[in-house]
Image 1 (cartoon, rainbow, N blue to C red):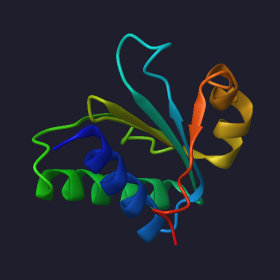
Image 2: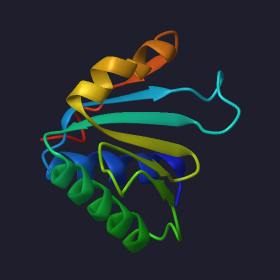
Image 3: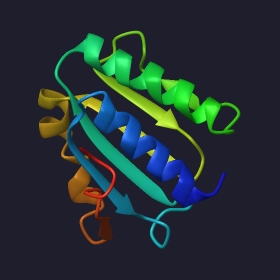
Image 4: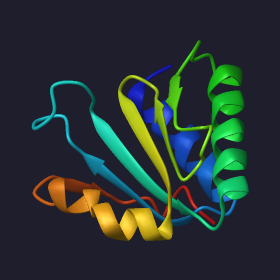
Length: 117
């Protein structure tokens, strides 16, 4: 599975599960551990869990063996590490509070519109 195929699978899955304000940044030149970081807002902890579970299932179906996942217990902020793509699934108040997108502001923003509904 290529990085682009993985990113497309991730973006389509988050969109299909009604993720809010999906953003992706190409961080390959600034990060030593990943190529793309994705941010998505969930409307509740249950919504976050549903997005994460669907994401794990779709990645597995697409051939990516085993992403790492953290934060499922509280589900306020779930991090899915799929190697070249890291996904942050967050409640709105945490996303606003931490403003992680600001860290990657100098990186190229990836146009997600072809992949979302």
